Amino acid sequence: MQQGYTGPEVCKITGISYRQLDHWTSTKLISASIRNIKGSGFHRIYSFNDIVLVKLVNKLRSAGISLQKIRIALKNISKILGKNTNISDVSVFSDGTSIYVLTENDQMIDLLKKGQAVFGISLGPVHTETEAEILSLYPDKISSANK
Image 1: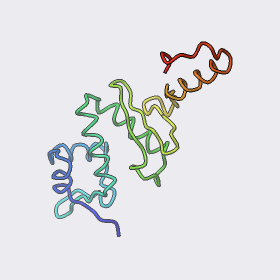
Image 2 (image 1 turned 90 degrees about the horizontal axis):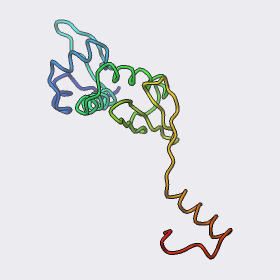
Image 3 (image 1 turned 135 degrees about the vertical axis):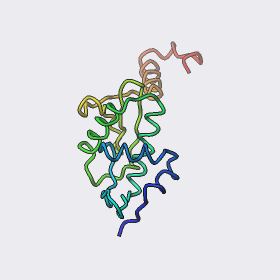
Image 4 (image 1 turned 45 degrees about the horizontal axis):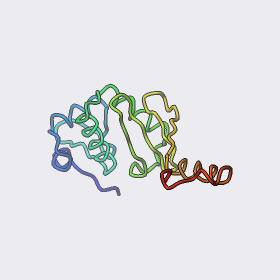
């Protein structure tokens, strides 16, 4: 059986208030995936991955990202990655406008544009490639200033 955490334990771990946790859970922004029952005598039970998502939401909120954008991103991350993906295998980025996920196979995806792939170019390899091309075509033009 999966280890579970009560609401007060999640709050202590994440640093958010119980009221905030209850609001995010009640509005289905996040879920208590082990037991999501509310009522007298029952407690929601959150999984480790639920806690990671609570911390993610909290960090994105602290960065000024709206709950509306976070909600869309979380819905799309589940669709894109699937239920069996370990959430710790991805990285989430934001530029303040959108939210991106970098998957374990190094694919960058814009979570607010229904999974539109984004690409990045590391300039280190481009520098090395350019230097090699110049060296092969114009060996006398390579200088230490290009390095």
